[in-house]
Amino acid sequence: MSDETQNDKHAPNVTRRRFLTALVTASGAAVAGTIVVPMVKSLDPTAAAAALATTTIDLNPIEPGMQMVALWQEKPVIVVNRTPAMLATLDEVEQKGILKDPNCNVPQQPPYCKNKYRSRIPEWYVGIKICNHLCCIPHYRPKKASVAPWWLGGFHCPCHGSMYDLSARVIKGSPAPHNMAVPEYDLDVAQKTVVVTKMYPLAHLC
Amino acid sequence: MSFKDWFVKRSPLPEMWREHMAEYYAPKNFNIFYYAGSLLLLMVVLQFLSGFLVLAHYIPTARGAYDSVYGIMYDVHYGWLMQYMHVDGVSLIFVLLYVHMARGMLYGSYRSPREIVWIVGYTTYLAFMAEAFFGYVLPYSNLSYWAGTVITSLFKSIPFIGGWVTTLVRGGPGMSGDTLNRFMALHVTLVFMIIVGLIVLHILYLHKVGSNNPDGIEIKASKGPDGHPVDGIPFHPYYSVKDLFGFGVWLIIFGAIIFYAPTFHHIFLERTMSTPANPLKSLPDVTPPWYLSPFYAMLRSIPNKNAGIILMVVAVLFPFVLPWLDRNPVKSTRYRPITRIMLLIFFINFFVLAYLGEQPPLPKYFFAERLGAFIYVAFFVLLPFVSKFEPTRAPPARVRFRAH
Image (cartoon, rainbow over all chains, first blue to last red; front, side):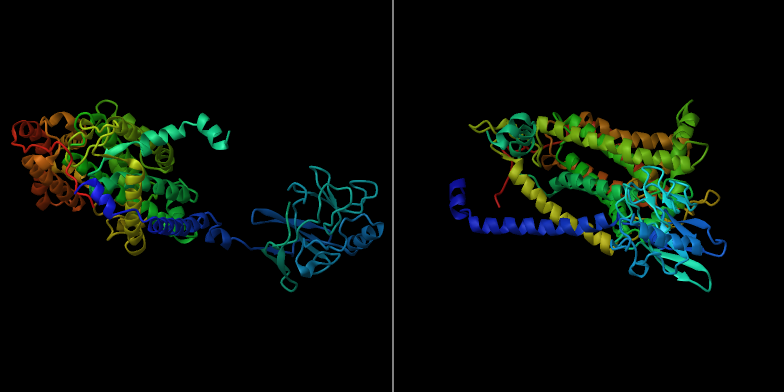
């Protein structure tokens, strides 16, 4: 059989070819998709990493006015036992009108902490001790006038000078845009323990 | 000037595309064995991807390695899939390598002018052996530990510098976390890069001289008025589309193994891989993976340490000189019945040796192992004489091909 007769017999059916090409392309894309999804998923945090997600903090050793930092998911979580005098400063800064977001409208904390104390119980502040500006660790400066003559106590970042009050609400004039983030946590008053459960998803750290 | 023109003017890619794909003329009579080459390329890419993803969770320390591998299995999302892809991929690469090499031997693809193609390809096979061995040790199971100990102790037989070489390879007096560190470095960088480089060379050398075919005749001998071989067809689209079909069939087989028989009856993934390394407890029987076991069977068939190692090294190196052992003007064994029978015996013998290498070292296997080693060596020793004097049928002037 010569090539010509063969070509006559099998004249290219363009529609059929296009259909087959589309079919092969689609099934190829389906195969690639089904393997790419597990491949990318395999780079997610492992189950073992997820199991290390919570940290329990014992509050008993923290005396009034004192603070403690615990490591939670490779991040520092600060717990402050605020005295009535310290809590009074929160109203004082509000009256001065120097806070960027005094009512905590930006969801930097779970709904149950959307108050001037930014905590479940006024005396216990639990928050992530990371500056909202560029991820530095602010210093805890509770003494009045320790940072500036008008200073009422709070957090001061050594990197770019961001200032926060004792509820970690950011003070005007700081490069940091938002209040410091508060994670989701449970507070057991009887046992005096805090369990940091997970990051509040709407909050951003830095 | 369109962007395409601007790009083409500056790019080497269109020329490379023409040279190696669109205007690379390959014989039109390729058969099923010719899928192995392109499938090997696919498998190397898949090994790279799955290897990259398991490496992202692997810890190369004596204490951490085994647990991290189990962590990949149970804690990493789809880690079991990446792990089985990587483990089963090794065995399938060796299946394809053996098919690819057997094809070359059947049709005389190692003969002039393709000697360098054969040598580069065979070197790639040896590099794959090294790559597989280093990867085998990384999980640091008890099998890894003892396989690593046995293989690295082979270097002790090198005269004068053997002890030094063994210590250098192990990074200490025995297998340890330091060994894992350097084996990981070898597995993921040096040996892998060597394999990639050799594959590129293999293809470039092949495309310089052109592909052989089942009839073992040169298609470049009969060219049409357009200067292209009349029995050649452009690699793209003809063979690229054909290989794509092969990819589809092959991925179904690969997927079936991963999902339904990931250990392949404990041939692809041995039972002894599931206990951690224990320097105080040797395994009941240390056998190599199936793809290395023919050489291991030859090693232990001789009851003398150094003689056994020499036989194994000779057996591994013999194929390098194959292009010069074959002295018959006819290349393909389609037209050389005696060589074809010898080759079939050689192939069967190779897999019998693989089976024997997996058996416990009992005296009842010794005779069969020695016979197997004898047949292996005899093939290479007899080939120069048989090929010189054997009766042959005349190969056709043009390739045999039936349109379909």
